[in-house]
Amino acid sequence: MRSTRFLVVLAAAVTFAVAAPAAAFAAPPAPNSIASLGDSITRGFNACGWYSDCTRRSWSTGIDGYIESHYDRINAVNDGIDGNTFNDAKTGATMADLNGQAGTAVSQGAGYVTILMGANDACASSEAGMTSVATYRAQLDTALARIKTGLPNSSVFIASVPDLKRLWQIGKDNSNARNVWSVGNVCQSMLANPTSTAAADVARRDRVRQRVADYNTQLAQACAAYGSRCKFDGNVVFNYPFQLSQVSGWDYFHPNNEGQRVLAEVTYAAGFGW
Image (cartoon, rainbow, N blue to C red; front, side, top):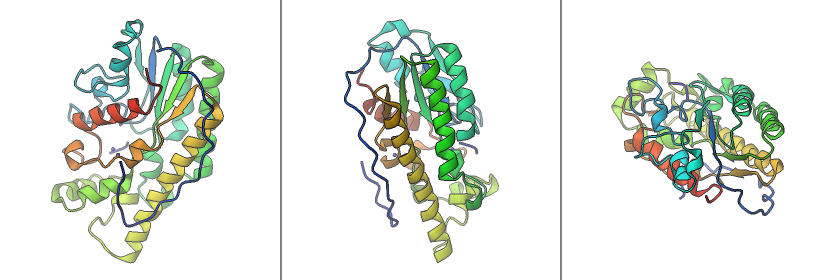
């Protein structure tokens, strides 16, 4: 995320379109290489340094043993992956950037590709700046087609976009969080006027949350269309009730090392079962 999960009980209802179930398949063999695509969450931003990336604590390709990343978990069952890890995510990326990252993963010959992308598409300076659902899906399809063509035998895991309203809910009563959100202009589409109970602000937060839910519907549908080599997390990231203690105390937005550890745990459990 720029400046950024089991049932969450919130005031607003969120609707998801029902995606067709993925075709049944036997789990592919554990891969010999992994590439992670996404934004600052996957870069481990603020997980160990002051406003900087910390890829060693990435939920996907991190090498910090405490995180127990996808890479570390696969390495425990297939040491052929040892050292073959690529973090191609970029801090600040949106879905528009996924195709370029996909091309990099193809050039690396990655046997396993993880994707977590979309928080920045919703986390705009205002609600009007959010990426439309149609554009988000078109950009996603382009990137997935590139992966499928270039890496036809590779496995793809897609994580749902986190619930931004959950972040507002756990941080709105914390003065430090409110100050950082305001001064840093953090995700103002959701986090502007955090203590306001005005109808306009309540409705705005609900619309932003619904946009994230709509993105996740598109992720599920696109993964199902991709075929048996793709696994969507079933919204475990979106639904996970993360706590303020799992968020960076520097920006009150990105997962800290504990947040990255939990993210690795819940997403790997939703994956291919290696």
